Structure formats: structure tokens, C-alpha cells
Length: 192
Length: 192
Image (cartoon, rainbow over all chains, first blue to last red):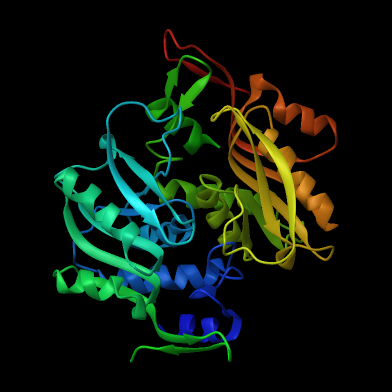
């Protein structure tokens, strides 16, 4: 998606340790116009897939998920990272290893909102090694729902998570795929 | 806002300990159509206030914030609850006591995205004692920005946080104000 690639080149910052900082428009401050355009593109790509629910994970997946779900005209469900007092009843649960936070955490989603009658699109802001997606896919499988695929804002192609899922036959659509970054020059190259 | 009050009466559940569970449409599964309608109403209420930024707090404030910011045609900034590796540079920080999680946590927002030229609308999904809002207002004051007011999806009026802020001259607009709840009958009464 040209609009997103241009924005990454303009405002993204490359730091040591494979960090692409896009917190001026994607995951701290959010350019809601850009995200709405991403939602429209995701909706176009998955039109006709019969999606009944968008599934994402807190916190920074929620914004992309909101605009995708709005365009697809279905509810958004966001998996939570810790069990809070307000979650009652039965939940699906899975474990996710976090690259950003260097820890493993549990994700949960209520069984009330996902079942075998659903067709699910998983949405997230970033895809690197794919750990968050693997946890979300696990939850979809536990629910018996059909997985239509995954839609991602920015995929770090060189970390291999997206291609691993594609090899397994899972449809993964990323609005921008970063093929390489150089922390010395700050340059970013996209997959063609 | 009639649409939201009707939805609370239809799908909200009252539990012991002052818990109003609205996770089927507001803070776990999200009815994006309803939230977009709330965004439109918030935009109508604050039209002409010259808002340059919507400020909310992760995680469940993000969805309401997205649709409010989209309608107000300005960026959304969400305060984070823990310092992550991806936040570099200087931050505003404040402390919030959580009713839901029964703990105190730090909230942070980058100084890159909020300054004295901004006019800020604070948005959140819930307002009870007002602790999260007080933390967000503190961040706005640290930044030197102008505070236009606060827009909330559901205020628990009987917990007093909203009225306390109003007494201080802060404009607080809630899409629904719950005046009382009865966990025995499950009934919910709204402020008129």
C-alpha cells in the first residue's frame, strides 16, 4: 500500500536491535485517516470472504482492527493480555512470546464472542516473528471458527514470521513488507 | 445518547462490586457501528472547540478514541501503561489508581506528540472515580496544551468522579450516565 510505504519512509525511524519506530502514526500517536485507508484496503482484499468477526490483540492492534471491522461491517474482538476482574466465564487462552517486551504472556478471549459459526480475519499492527499471530490463530482454532486470513499493517519480511504462515497455507496480507532496514543510514527497503 | 442507553439496557450485565459488564459491545467485543455513532456525537458536541488532538489511554479507550478522532479529523494519542522498549526520548508521566485491577500504575505519553500548541479532548470508555482522567489531565497540563474537555462512553454517576471534575470547571460529556444499578434485579437507571 503506497500511502503506508510513503509514510514509513517519511516518518519511520530505524533503531538498533531491529526496531522500526512508527509511533508518530501507528502505535502511540495514530493517524486515523491513514488507518481508515488501511481499513478500506483490508476490506477490499477480503471482500467476499464472508468475514463475521475481526480479531486482534491489545493494545496497538485495536486501532487497525477498528477501522478494518468498520469497513467490513462486523464486530471487532480484541484478545486481552491479562485476566481482569471484568472477564467472567469461560475463555479461550493461548501463550505469546513478546519480542518487544522480552517475556511470555497469556492472551484470552471470551468464548461468548467466537464460535464455529464465525469466519475470522485476524488483524494486527506489526508482524515480525509471528508470535502474536500464532497465539491468535490458536484461539481461532480452539473456537472452531473458520480463519479467512491475517491482515497486517507492517510486516518485517526479513524476520520470516509472515512467510512461515504463508507456507502453512494461511493467507497473510500486509499493507507494507519491510525487506531490510539499515540503522546506520536509516534506510528502509520494501518487498516488491 | 439514546442508542447507547438502549444497548446498555439490552446487553449490559450488572455484577456484584459495582461492575457493569459491557464486554459484548464496548471493551472486549466492540460494536464498531455503535462506536462510530458515538464518535459522531462527540464530534458534534465539541465542534468549534478547535481540537487538535484526542488523548486516551490503552487499551479499551483506544476504540472510542479512534472514532472520535476520525470524526474530529485529528490524530489520536494513547497513553501507555508501562514503559516499552519502543518508547524513546522524553515522556510525560503520571500515576493512576486502577479500580478494575486494584493497583497503581504509571501512564506515559511522548513529549513529541503533545505541546502547548495543542487543544486536547480526552476520551475514555468508562468514568467511575475519575482516576484515569485525572492522570490524563495531569499529562495535558504538563504539556502546556489547552484542555477542551473529556468525552466518555459510560459514566457511573453515583461514583462521583465526573461531577468532581465538573465542579472544577472541566467540561465532561458522557454518552450515558448510570445513576444506579441493582445487582439483584439487574436493573440500570440513567441520569436525566
